Amino acid sequence: MPEKIRFKNADGNALAARLDRPDGESPCAFALFAHCFTCSKDLRAAGAISRALTRHGIAVLRFDFTGLGESEGDFADTNFSSNVEDLIAAADYLSEHYEAPRILVGHSLGGAAVLQAAQRLDSVQAVSTIGAPYDPEHVTQHLQDAVEDIEETGEARVQLAGRTFTIRKQFLDDLAATKMEATIRTLGRALLIFHSPVDQTVGANNAAKIFQAAKHPKSFVSLDDADHLLTDRSDAEYLGVVLGAWAEKYVDRSVSEPETPDEDVVTRTEGTYRTAIQAGRHALVGDEPESVGGDDDGPTPYGFLLSALGSCTGMTLRMYADRKEWPLDETIVRLSHEKVHAEDCEDCDTEQGQVDRITREIEIRGRLSDDQRERLFEIANKCPVHRTLLGDVDVRSSLRSRDDAQ
Image 1: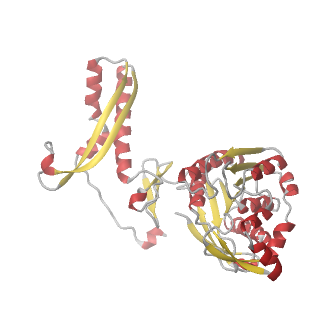
Image 2: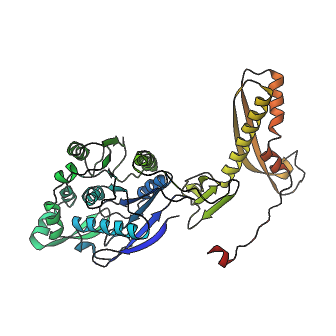
Image 3: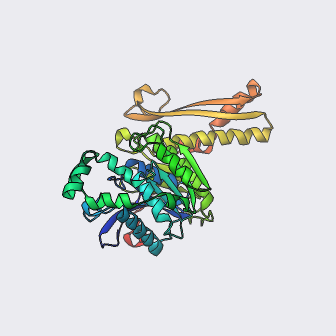
């Protein structure tokens, strides 16, 4: 679960942030995420992208700009330049309390902001933009008829994304004064540009202009049919996977090993059903489906149970076949779990209540004789997890004291 953080910006306003960290390991690098215009750190796409980066060992700080989300301050007093200053304040906080950011990621106007901020942060090695405008003044296209009123009266109330915001003339003046071409041309960092060809908010021609202005190393990834806010979860997750793989080139992978012994498992569930699982040196995530209130970020507990039985079955058959020097190519195990009434279960010891039924179908591939296949099928029931499930299990639980948990 993200760690909630508050830090002060240059004007003394407390900005609300969340720090997503890799499960069970020390981060190999820190990244800063800047959200889109009038959005917040809690945008679902921002969370999905941040979690994808953590799976690559990268910690991500995402925060609300001044006057937005849970941050203090008046949005009407902000502008593009103040957003850049908020990014610098966030980077300073990371430098003081953790480690200076080496990766900047910005969505929409936040993308333009990270391009501006990068040249003021010596620690930054890589920058990525998502649906970013080439010119911040592009925002005025979405203020509709309010621009004329703002120029005449100094401010106006504007409807944006279903909410009302006060926009002042200083905001427009600041956008007009910001020139990006020289900033992009002299960026001096690796750049990865994400953009959808059907983005109706920021046209794809903006990505082309950014790409043309930038110098190598630079890359472009098309988001196919994604919308501007990446409301389709699969689009955000795809972006996160690609971004994480790209970012690995620019971070130090010498991550310290977790302290968890090889055979121990530690789980942490905080705030939602999403559970961080550290199994020895391996980090996993468990969750519940959206239909019951989860985020579907990983298998359910029963999904892990079936996975344990399936993988143990396959490993056991592999070991046995190798010892016998039998030509086993692969084993595919399909499993399902359900609750059934005891009276409907012929092989159950009890006739009352409900019992758990696991259905396991084993497919054995290879140039094997019928006798060899039958023997491997018998061996499947001897896998350790199968024996554990059918045997007497003694689970001993204890409550850790508050002092021990510190």
